[in-house]
Image (tube, rainbow over all chains, first blue to last red; front, side):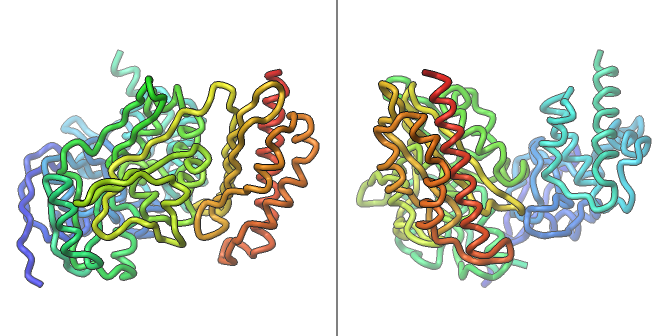
Length: 162
Length: 291
């Protein structure tokens, strides 16, 4: 079958981007193999583990189970787009400061999921963090340091806002 | 790697329906894709055409009709939208509680309620709770539309009565009566629930006047425990509470779970018995407290 390629225009980590994809291309393959952004990880490949989490229009999604063409006209954020000119994002810094990762494989997904949480709820309780972050799996940390990282980042981001 | 397919973007329901009529079994409808894409990746669906309905205007509606006391849900409404909706929280708190626990937030951001029901995966939460709510679904094709009780929409494992060219265009949920008390309990050791139990009971003059007890994940489709329902109607909360364990035992007898990696048939029946007893007890207790 020779299907026409689908042209895409979207924002990738804040920059206008154009590309063409096949209908059957998955977003994770497009991100990793075509855009070369390998921070997004493939692990369970069935929407359970969250290693492939990216933000589409600010919402956390599993890039392993979304078609690439869905990004057309939308805003895609991968872990590579999080740090600004002035340095690491407060979530990235907090994960370093609090030991929020060991092997690092789940970390891009964890940080992006945490960003979507804090964008929606800038001052979450521990219970709210636990509930929201139960979407993503970490096999190293036991989660406690991840929760602490998010609490610390939230504190710093709220301080900077005021 | 997903096998290539032809992608269609119908602009209207009419166009979608005639496409589906023409392509029949070769086509699948795409909304959120959270179930469909898993099937395609595993090679479990033989699909050469995908009909993406997201460009059809007007399918994302979520509104509460205060006059008719009904919630109307369009086919593109995601689980997350329902979870965060104020109007759903105000009138259908059990549905919000259920949606908050469904899968994970990444899936809830993408997956639609209509897609979940249409996929008819027996290990799911919404069907169980919505059958207890007396929800209906509207299916449409070129010949017109039909409205079905959700209970009759489900046919078998992964099967509904929807025809190839029919689209699920609306889910309608009547608001429970003011004197209704309910519970939704689930046991979920993995990603999908192993057992779900929904109970909605109306109370009048000190007795239960109407009741829905639905067992989920333990049969080809959500199963109403009609004998238990019949027994409880006309009884006081105290009488019902005293029989909670017996009602659980009876529910365990009628359910038809499959043995799988999560547990044996006996184990699952035990979970049904426990959850039903807890749900019955909790609702009877609330009814007693209200008297």
